[in-house]
Length: 154
Image (tube, rainbow, N blue to C red; front, side, top):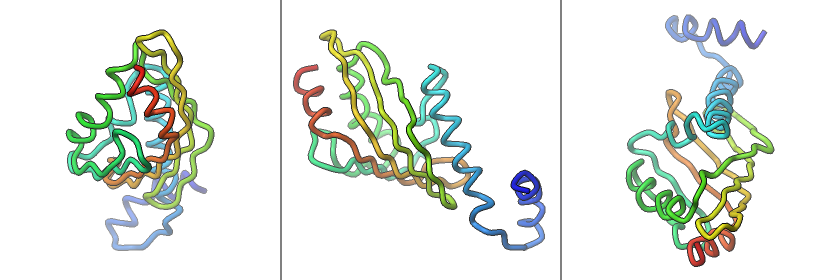
């Protein structure tokens, strides 16, 4: 039945009919699942889904915690300082994805090797809001102590 809803959703919308939010939750979830799989396999990253005007919040008290009000600001000021300390890309392992409408929550673990030869490991919970297949708002929860150690020790 879900496949029928997804196939008929564009027709229903064109006719001005309403569909339950659950009809779209699968689509948002699938978009995020596919992006995490691509990231894990080295074929892309979740960041490829960011809208140019995304609002991304890094929760907690770390050197990169704060609110970023564009894709470029987030990539330059939050992602770049982290990846600069890593010899390998972070490889995500998804533990669970839960979706409701445009909102997707991903619980995942990331691992990478640092330039110093150590292992960077962190656990994340990301709440993503999608619109037209793009991430427009996000809140990232993570182990800020692990992140601070990475940024201090590299």
